[in-house]
Every structure is written in C-alpha cells, then in structure tokens.
Image 1: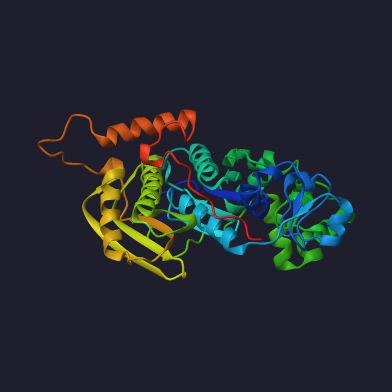
Image 2 (image 1 turned 120 degrees about the horizontal axis):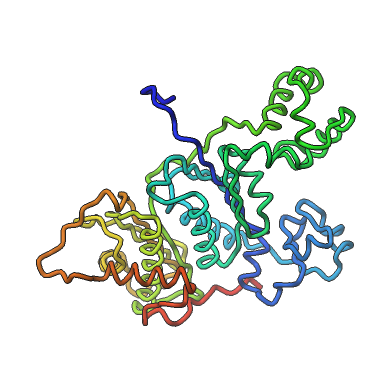
Length: 397
C-alpha cells in the first residue's frame, strides 16, 4: 500500500550489463581482434574467445598467458572506457530517471509504473540494447524481474547479448533449479560451507529452515541466505540526483577547427538525441550544448524553447544558436555534447499547430524514418549531411 492506502504497482527492475565491457570497447577500435582472445593486464576483462580457454577477470596475466598463450593483451584506455560508459548511461536515462550505476559496466533501472509511457519492459530492453549496439558498438545483456536480485540473475542467464524477463509468478521456477553458487550474494566459500548441509541447488537452500541457517551462519547472514533462496530482495534502485534528460556526446577522431565540420558532428548528435526522445515518447524544452576544446577546457550553455518538441531541426536550430554564443575563434574542438531536459510525456501534450503549418510536417517524416530504421538498421535512412562516417579517435600507441 502507498501513503494513500492504494495498492502499489508491481515493481519492475531491469539490470543492464555490458558483455566483456573493456574488451568490447577495444574491439571497436580493433575489429581484426574479433575472434582473437583478448585480456588486459591483471585480467580486468576477457572477451568470450579468451573465456573459452578459462581466462577470467581477476586472474594474473601470467596465469592467463599459460592458459591462452596466443591471447592479445590490450593496454588500458580509461578515458575511452569512461566515455563509453557515460554514453550508455545517457541512453538508459532516456527511458527513466531512476537509473543506478552499480559499476562502470552495469546499471539498474526502476521501470515500475513506466509501462504506459515507455512501453512493456521487454520492449524497452530490446530498444535500449539496439541503441547501445548502434551508437556505442558493443553488446549488452538485459535481465528484468520484480526486484534487483531476480533482475541480476536474469541478466546472468541472458549472457551473452541476450534478454530475459522473469515475471513474479515465475521467480521460484527460475531460481530453484540453479546451482546454489549461481545465486547472487553466494560466493565459492559460502557454497563450500553449504555442501555439508546437503545444499547443491537454490531449492535445497530454500528447504532449510531460516533458524538452521541463522544457527550456522549468524542471525543476519542466515536470514539473508533464506531470503535470497526465495527470491526476496527489498533493496531499491537509488538514482543519482538530478533532472531526467536525454543526452548524447561525440568525441571527434581529430580535433576540429572549422565550424562546418563541428556543425556537421553537432547535427549527428542532435539526430541521435531527437530519435531517442521519439522512441521514449517524450518531448523536451530545454537544450544544453557542451563543448570540449583540445586543451580539455569545457564550456556549456542552455536555451529554453517556447514549446516542448522532439523535432530534430528545432533542436538543431537552438544548438546552432548556442554554438555561435560559445564558439572561441581558432580554438580546436575535441567533443560536442547535447542534453535535453524539461521532459514531458508526448501523450500528455497538446501541440498547437500554426496557421501555415502543412498537414504533414517534419515530425511525421522523422517518425516514418524511425520506423524504417527500426526495421532495416541505422544506415537505412540518413540525412545527406551525415553520409560520411564519424571519424574515431585512434587507439593510443
């Protein structure tokens, strides 16, 4: 029950986990490594070909080389990893403001009550997986459940590059057949202590009385083990403070000094932002432009429109005005970013047409283009100004 005595909507939690995140970022710049085992230093990440040889995160590089002598060891580029992670979070925040980043490559979304605005959870999951793949070039797995525990377990079962939704009535059938060491919160040492008690599966753990677990593991740990075995988790998704927005940024392959080049890339970013907004069913009113120069100094400025919109050209016109105000002559630009806030559900807004507005305008054309892109891929419909691919910054030597 909520504060007014009304029944609360069933919780819907989504866990989004990047597949072999660090290795996947490296593969964007080195597609020739696609089928080659990859690891990094004291192994922080290994791609799936490397995992086939037994290479795992946390393993020493010497041990990894013994298991897979022909693996490629990629040097770290934490700036690239952080930038990709920030771009993914911006995609997730398109669908809900309730996003909690658990790590650089994992996040939880609370979609409770959001079905009427952004759509069914499984459809949202497939949409964001497609956007992450198209914009960031990496795969992610998505799990959906009535709480964080089940969502995380569903994500683990969906890997690699999959989606699994577990409805409340399916939780026990999903959890109980699994090996107990697969249960989130149970490590190898705890699983070893459970084996003398006859516990091999989650169902075996659920069959033990809470009092017996508390006797052997302590009051708090024993109660937690019992709750986990029955799929109970009362922890909430804790979002970072701030207003929900839709954003995107692009770091250029080389620093740009000519306005025409910067404006072309700015258009590319605005197209992505507006497309995400239409997919999420929201309109926005305030646009913020962020510029980063070659010396890593950053400037930003915002502009509020007369009415909320999701039309690319309206955002682009505002972004150009902001660019003219921020631009420093002769300074080379390294990155542009656009964020739209002041979001409202499109279904709740009545847009007043002007007297000279045609029956069908840019909004209709863009929605038609969105449908084609969803069916045939991101290259199916493009603006002529964006037919050249965005240059990527080369990997460090």
